[in-house]
Length: 333
Image 1 (cartoon, one colour):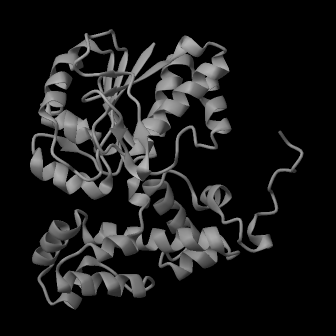
Image 2 (cartoon, one colour):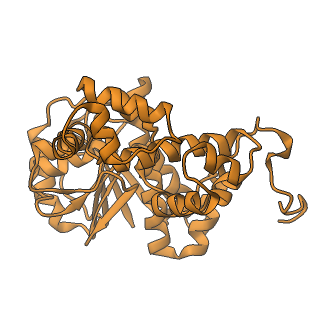
Image 3 (cartoon, one colour):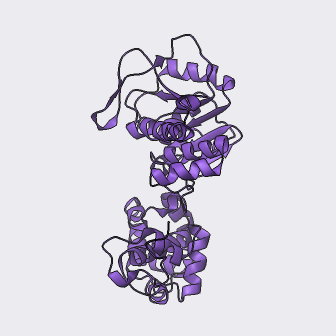
């Protein structure tokens, strides 16, 4: 099964190395090095410059005679340099000949430039979603997903999400057991919980360009236990509810209520990771009212409850009594 990784100049190195490592490990576990034949394809002869000071020696370039490709994944250039028109033409020609087509992170811009995504549901790195939406309005963009499948098309979020996608493709090809073995070896989740909304609400607050909106966001972050209804926040901004909601959404790509939820979740996650406070204490301190309300918010937004989140993500430097007493014995496999 030939996996082709298309690398534009300036490619994010992990867009290439991450998926390649997953496929290589799967083939190793199968005991068949040829189970996945991973090839790097470049836009021209010579080394491909990647991020982190790396250089890649490509197996082929787009001007070589065509060979059969099972799965074609396109890496992205985080600098958003000019799109190579020859690469765009090659993608248009080859897209219909492959079984699976996908992109990692900003590789979606190359697929979009080739006209291969119109009307498709796609994702990309959350930081790039607005630009993708503005430049390619015919796309149906969901910027919270780790990766999305639309037919035989796959698109992913930030750079490490390429490994999540590769693991999902291994599971599709060879079953859950092999994918789980590879995930355990590479210290990965077989399916990581939550979406890109796990990025910090504090970071999101810094992205706003409207002073009134910034003031309201800072108020939310500083007063998580206060009544934070849209009406209250609009009053604090000195705006009508309708106008406040419109401006907030325009600046943040989320509603005021979604920002409040994200801020409370962000604060709760930090306490769950780094403190020994009980779930009820965390819930009250972060404005959820009680542990049940916090659990519903976690499941709705992240996909797991706060207790399970703590088990998965608690800091190695957290207090010793942070772990619940029901942790399995250390001799369990």
